[in-house]
Amino acid sequence: MKKKAYKFRFYPTDDQALLLAKTFGCVRFVYNRILKIRTDAYYQNGTSINYSAASKILTDLKKDPEFVWLKEVASVALQQGLRHQQTAFTNFWDGRAKYPTFKKKNARQSFSLVGTAFRYRDGNIYIPKSKDPLDIRWSQALPCEPSTITISKDSAGRYFISCLCEVDIKPMPICAKQVGIDLGLTDLYITSNGFKSGNPRHLKKYEAKLAYLQRMLSRKKKGSKNRNKMRLKVARIHAKIADCRMDATHKATRKLINENQVVYVENLAVKNMMKLPTLAKAIADAHWGEFVRQLHYKGDWAGRNVIELDRWFPSSKRCSTEGCGFVNESLPLNVRKWTCPKCGTRHDRDVNAAKNIKAVGQTVLASGATGSGLKAA
Image (tube, rainbow, N blue to C red; front, side):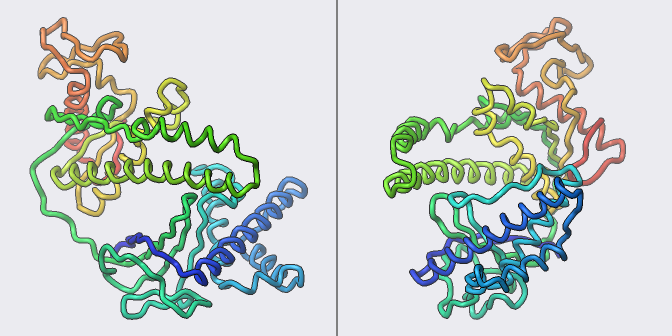
């Protein structure tokens, strides 16, 4: 059994929107308040506040007459906010994430409900302190009753609900195909079979409109209603770009996993590459990090192997012709095609890289490595 989240959009009533706004605000207040307390305690006294101590602080806050409004929302949402904060600190201590930051009012808002804090009845979900069910636009039926729901509102003002369910995901039938892929900018991915995906460049499509709206936003008075209206217009453009990018990534990774038993890909240092000012925007739009992440979890669900190769392997510089293996000393990015001086083969830079990635990946697989997310040294 695996845990899988199903995300849907919903449209709250006026009363529900008010309740959600209060809940978002209370969760954000508690999160920020206790984060400041934990930070001050560590830097001033060198003491660490764990989840139990943070929970006690929350209890004291709710007893304070100044913060009596914290009782107007579901207590489970506040407790889950502290659990998420504890997880953020755990990830920070283990080196997986940066130090937790304060939540902002105009950024994405969310809260989670678990156990008996919500009701799921006849295909409807009821949240605490609301008599009416949420008007959810179901794109598919849930496989079972959700164990946890997360309600969120993005910066564009859209409401979503994510339902966490335990499902039995069966592996896909074994197939004989294997493919190596090279991630790029002219084409989002190139396969060892010679297929080039192209690049829709979602950001470039809306860049002119986005720049115009951002100029208009910069001219509005801070705190005014007109500024907030313009902020929503800018946020909707960003949401449109993000949705298009994510949709294209899901379709591409699903196609690769469905058609191939083994997928070989380079282990790229995307965060470091994003530091290049000339390529940062294009790399962000290409979605490389999310692309590889989706390959891994979809491969794990489907019983496929996703093997990452070392980023320092000269996949583009090396001749992929069998029996040759010539390696160029240098190959600038503007050189898209080159001829091997040893065997005379004419190579497309990206297809050649994908072929080399597949060849080395097969060597790793033959050495006895199996499973999703392996890396070749």
